[in-house]
Image (cartoon, rainbow, N blue to C red; front, top):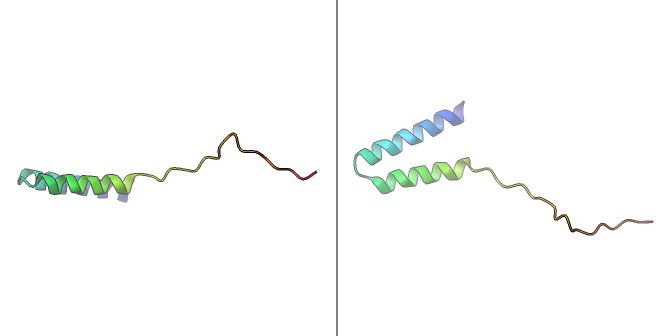
Length: 55
């Protein structure tokens, strides 16, 4: 719920800046929000990796 409110607040700030003609500031706010919401990619093992086994 906090994340949703944070996104909404950021969007409303960007709207306010855009209404006043500060388009670059609005874009910057939205870019920062996008960066915060992106999840890190998970590492996937290569499928062609050789497996060493002790016999």
